[in-house]
Length: 110
Image (tube, rainbow, N blue to C red; front, side, top):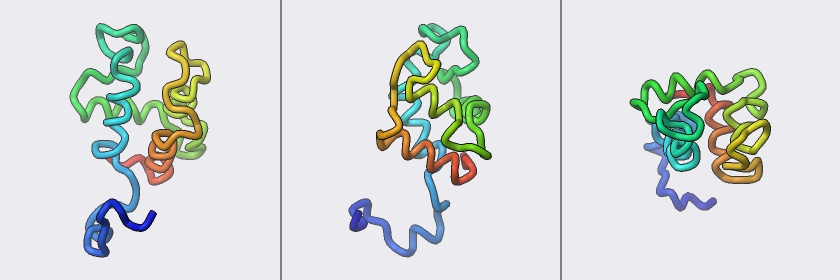
């Protein structure tokens, strides 16, 4: 750590404490999931489609999380390859997995 992200006391007071969907999670979904989870993608038949506006992507993501058992959220288990035709996208030891888990544990803010 060491604060290399340039965080100061002022920013931590005005911003939510954990990752947000728009700033932290959506870019990961766009990078790792969107190429298949789009209307014209290999996973277009699923309920998890990301080639829409950000608000809709957020609503979609909420359907794939479990606030009671964050680490069992389909958003994470599928990305880790469990029951996922697309294989492993972000395994449970990846920083991406940690970010998404922290987002869910923080109440999944937009």
